[in-house]
Image (cartoon, rainbow, N blue to C red; front, side, top):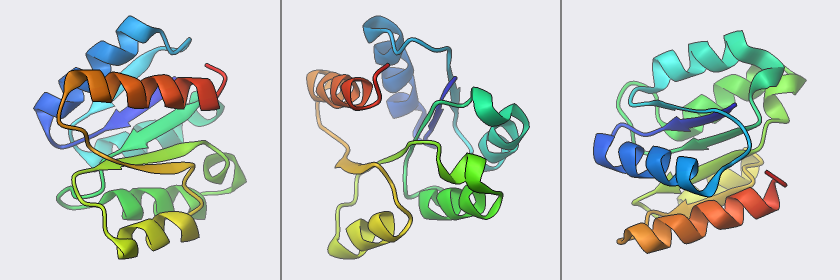
Length: 127
């Protein structure tokens, strides 16, 4: 299962639709709030193959989501985790590296660019 987490419902819809079009090889589920996403991930365990999350979200940002999963054990720490955010600062990149994210992407301005990012993620993860 591939989990998408983004509080921007437009971006979430685009990601979910594109993920379906390019075929990630696993069911895709999207969450517009990080709290139920974390609950779902913890309950699903080894069925989660990839997580793509926004950084700037209310209640729990993407870095906090990643940290919470790492603290939940090796199984969750080893799930490939990709950040996709409108912000791209040196500080954000350092945080992503410390949290051992697979990659940090700046959100693109076009659907074609979103597709390129998902294609790269698919290739990197052998999906």
